[in-house]
Length: 337
Image (cartoon, one colour):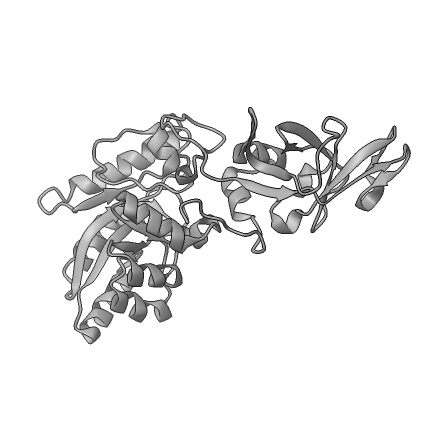
């Protein structure tokens, strides 16, 4: 299953879903009905809502044939009643809280609730799943505890096994090899990106680049300040370039006076504070850069590369945050188009 929630992490769910469907993915997971609706209408593969559904979402979810999450007996009852009203069968997967503490049937109540829910009419109990809270560390006690809880629940349904069993996200795919899953869910690995911690068992290459261009270059004198707050003062006459990309486009404020971008394969330091629409860079190492030249913020230029993970370290965050922060005005360009 490919997980394309939050508009495929902000990268554009419909073109990415179509490309992945063509590549042969088994299923698609999203966070809510609004994300699932356009995919149901354009693709002929199962679409799951992985999080919780609110009551107003249930009629549309059942009508569209979305595979719905059971997070409590009450939600199972609501699916059953709505499916009966629509003369349909609601297909469901049971979400088990084995330790994430966020959503799902508590593990110690799961067997009782599932057995009760499976007796409800108009409902097909196809699958069961959980979610790791520390998947980038297979040796963490919580990871082992979660696996043991999930395996124990599955063992109590040996005579009526679930067709689809899943727990592993991208980090877990790289760190675990349990034999009792028959599906995995990948999200950030789709873009050739890993979490900052944990193993990198999959051989991936980045599919994402973020680019802008050089729109100004000027020699500014020694003593000239750069940007809001005057956080950078030129100690000598310096060739300064301006790039139309700022924190509104996803460049973190922490890049101020600390990050670099690639221009013609040369690293050019960001000087001054990142503003909403612009960054300024020191062009001393690349004085021949022309106006309009491509500026690589994420991606390769020549033999050098700046990765999403590099930006995550600068921001002291994680790669998901970097991708999801790319602003709406950044044009999404899909190479296969």
